[in-house]
Length: 75
View 1 (cartoon, one colour):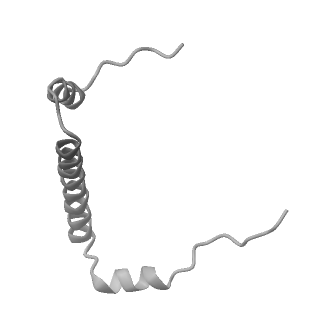
View 2: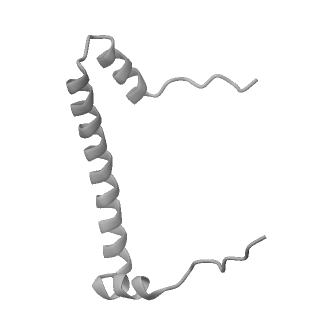
């Protein structure tokens, strides 16, 4: 049996939020807000990484030309 993990602060706040009646439309709005929030956080981290490494359009162009797929070999 896996050890029981405590809920995070975020999980507890979401449980409090959803203890109230929420319409399907409100639920979709909340999901969209959370999605936007986490996208913005990831976008900001990528921007910081690009600044830190000195990357720009040239690096993205290099990546677009890389071929990193493994060769397909049917069984």
